[in-house]
Image (cartoon, rainbow, N blue to C red; front, side, top):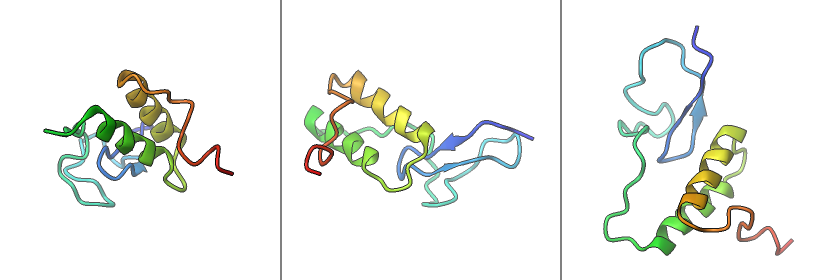
Length: 89
């Protein structure tokens, strides 16, 4: 039984696989490209940062997905510590 988790890079859903085979699609959104980094052709760096900051604000976000989104923000040169909306409370 596999113990690792999969993360859909489109809808940020995390799940534990039932078999050793790579899933064909995300069980939540059904996207067959769930494991590919989202490409934002023609999008600016700010759009990519906004995408990952939105991911960090998802309710019920797993710790694995949270860390993945923080790493993506760090690679973009954004401050992964500051998430919009956190200071507003």
